[in-house]
Image 1: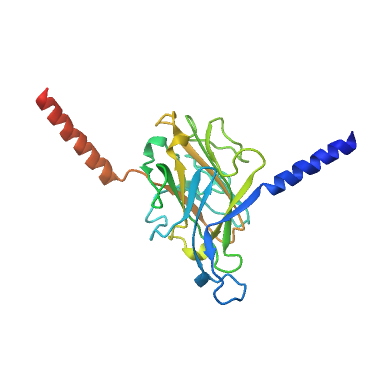
Image 2: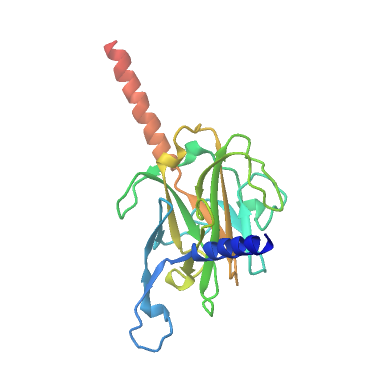
Length: 255
């Protein structure tokens, strides 16, 4: 019996190892043949993971002064993790002054430039030293949607009682990692990755529900990392309101 249990444990362990995958968001052409990945030999790339599209980003500039992050984190440790909340005390590795809750109604629906399905887009900006390793590994990404998550403050991390709309690892023993080469867009202020989550994942959820994004990184050697979302710009909201107002006037005129 003990031998059987040991065999089952080994099989499960091997299955878990076999299902691990690393997705580099870069392409490498070793043009000088030295076997070293130089920054001049690296270009951006895309990866499809569990139905979502991840893409290297070349949007300039980003940074806190140009985008509005809903989650910003930093730590001196190699492993870094946080999620967005309105809680004003530090939770995990977040920076409370730059971290806030987010509702589903705030997210615009976009179509990725590469094509594909309508999605909710999240922008990641990383800050990493250009020395070895220049790579920052995104080892966990989970997005939950549900009411009452605005002040969620579990530390250590505990998954909330809400709808899990996206998990980088997916079901089962899958362990996915996204490898980001900092040198593609160096410095805090150069966006590094777009995460496009299909709108179908949010189907049936209330627009007033909170969106909670949890992410975890490995090989952190600098900081900080920040997440932003494609949200309606004030000018766009104003134009939409004026358009609806004009439509309302025309409608009443013909009633």
